[in-house]
Image 1: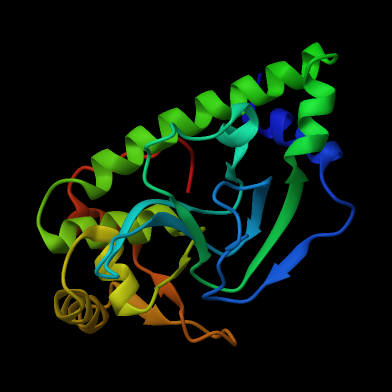
Image 2: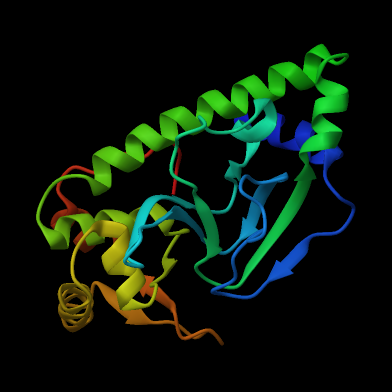
Length: 219
């Protein structure tokens, strides 16, 4: 099964209208676990953990075409797992998939069960690639791999520097300095776009700084 076919099939179980969510918004903050799965259509969503001191530890960034929340279909995380929060990194458009609706249908629909299995397997693979890209190398390599990961064609979203630092595990100062250097080198260029966080990229130069870059799909 192709992932595009799986997305098209599961979309039939989504709410009728997309949700438009502004940047820096927590999804379902009152829930210990997500009550819905989501398909990201536009924007970026981070998922992570806030420790007792308030520090943010990011474990995943979701981009257009990603589905997240399906892991909660069978009860979600283990009882003693740290609670994960999902937050919009930019203005987002998502389709909401109520988990109660999916639970009611998957037991009697083999095709839906196969679609969910495929999307969960796809997420495991994507998570492996994400960890490989972000988990090693100097700061500039990790930041360039992140920019390539979220890029679509010749543009990408550059997050606020504090969040970028949390994503790639560097200080805010290091993130700011690295982005400034990439702009001076022409790797990141202003984009004729209403949002200031959108920039054009020189993919060849970003790949040069990134070193090895792994992606489970075309950017």
